[in-house]
Amino acid sequence: MELGMVGLGRMGANMTERLVRGGHRVVGFDPNAEAVTRVVKQGTVGADSLAKLVKQLNGSRVVWLMVPSGDPVDKTIEALVPMLSQGDTIIDGGNSNYKDSMRRYKMLKEKGINFVDVGTSGGIWGLTEGYSLMVGGEPSVVKKLYPIFETLAPAPNKGWGYVGPNGSGHFTKMVHNGIEYGLMQAYAEGFEIMKAKKEFDLDLHQIAELWRHGSVVRSWLLDLTADALKEDQDLKAIKAWVADSGEGRWTVFESIDLDVPAPVISLSLLMRFASRQDESYSAKLLAAMRNQFGGHAIKTT
Image (cartoon, rainbow, N blue to C red; front, side):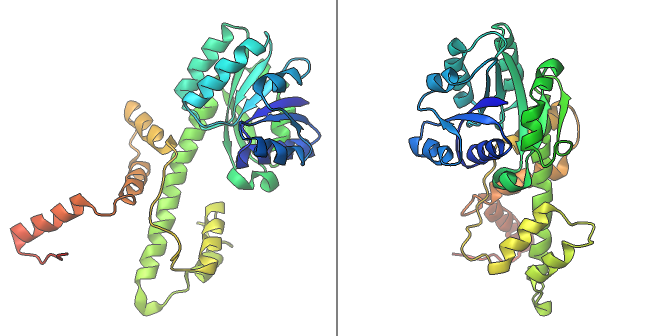
């Protein structure tokens, strides 16, 4: 099968290489010419514009987008639509908001162009490990794309699946990322508690390795934690600043809209916000209040 890949950042490039290794013909485009050059060396057909990418695709064309969510996706689709024909398909494999995906599906359907939203997990490891793919779209359209998903997934029958109508792929990925926030926060807090127990002088890397085998808390995230602790348990080179991609926020918003309590995910998101404060005004005010009502000591600068 052949398709076009728009967006050849690290994840898009890895997906492209995995598809080429799986026997697919892939035409790749990225505004960064160097990114195109890199994937061409791996067997991808290069294109220096969207128009040339579309022109090099045969039959019913499939264009997979791996571009940042929001306006970049809309602008890319807007540019592609005049070049595509009825029956062609656009796949959004990025971290788009599921409501945007539902809107894009309706807009493209009116033009006779298919739209499929694919929540994609696996990050930079997907090239070797395979990607977890949560696919939303019309069943008849998705079925034609099975060869692509079977190649990108860890195995043809594992790690990918059709989850429901348009929007459901990105909705499922949104919740997936919300859960990821909670898991990561729990690991981080647990290891910090162990690090604080100075009298035991615990080897955190050793403990992470122990837990990786047979423990009920073993996971791929724990594997990555062990790798991070291997070189430097104090993590001296890393600043305590944690970004969020947006999907954790969307998950919390959705829990509020649906009246579903999600305290762990919500608090893990708030802890990421806290990590970005060089000085916490609220913490200062808490200390001041304790001093006012109980005479508790405060630390001054």
